[in-house]
Image 1 (cartoon, rainbow, N blue to C red):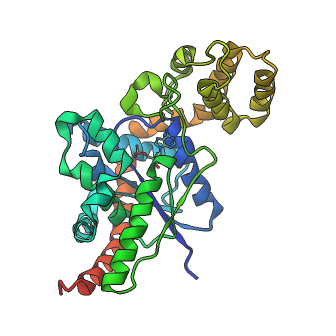
Image 2: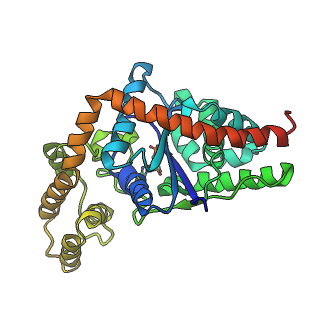
Length: 326
Ligand code: AMP
């Protein structure tokens, strides 16, 4: 019997950070290694055009994501790794889904509202219909699950709504995929721990997977920790939650110290710097090697594109008949 399928994508918008890793990428590798799923992971380059960007940088950003995929352990023999824009079926299905999606549903999307507020000079229609393209990205592959961070739950809900609408109007075709969350579906910013860690806040808010230990140390030195006498401490919670993901015992000891107020935040930061340095040392090395061998990365994508295209075209073929275009 065919294995249940999962699919997820990452935008090529620069370096990937601990939020991407703990919310999504680490999970991709675990799901792949479980051997239970038919895994599809892609680089969402079309989505990334909705934000302000430099066209000359885009190919380097694509390379950054595929090198990160491979250096973290995604294996083209086990998972299909591909580039969204190489498969025209994504935009073709998105158009059909556009005709099924009420404007009001898209106006509710919090990510659209956040991004529109952030890039007031560039509130483009692509930003608005982004979740519809995402529904097409997902449903073309008829997956059972979509590993994502918490910020994507609303978009996966919309995907299910679009699947239902299509099935009701044109006849049963799409499953209703569910989001697959990690234990830490929302990693917070170092400097504003009430906001999610995101490149768009600035480099000092995030720890990139490629950051060298001296950079991590400097960023953590500035990370927000306790406020005098406050009981709610989101900055400390964030740092200890991060540590917990890599060394549960050490985090447990610090949680105890936090409770009895003997904790020294400089110790937490030093421990976290060391822990992250060790956790990503091999990754940094392999990532650097891959960036120096871009052909290796391109070959992987070309093979993955072919595999993805087969699946996507088969679905689009059925859609074309069902909606009456043929
Ligand atoms: P994107 O940058 O939108 O392509 O995000 C790629 C993946 O990383 C998505 O599954 C997001 O949900 C996830 N992600 C991004 N930022 C965070 C964060 N701060 N915490 C947890 N997951 C995140």
